[in-house]
Amino acid sequence: QVQVVESGGGLVQPGGSLRLSCAASGIIGRIPTMGWYRQALGKQRELVAAITGGTTTNYADSVKGRFTISRDNAKNTVYLQMNSLKPEDTAVYYCNVIQSIMGRESDYWGQGTQVTVSS
Image (cartoon, rainbow, N blue to C red):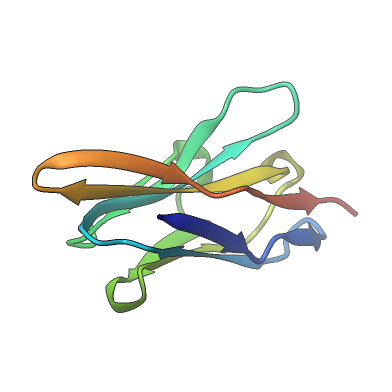
């Protein structure tokens, strides 16, 4: 059974930094993509950043230049380094893992970790 567990959220002042981690266990196939999404109160969930196995990355315009996504394939772990945080980055951050087995893809979500940017 695949499990996805995030960690690293918390309260930070504007301009500060946080690093989120997400570890996937129970993986038996390939992981073509790992990503981070966020959902602010009253808003829809949105993509923050994603990374392929070949380390191609994709970022939301709102976080480009401030956030960096990376992954450790040996550990099935993805990270999100968040710098220069703004109050509008406040949200629950969710990790998404796509597993591919014989060409069939399934995606899995973590439980979410709260990030609050406030003075």
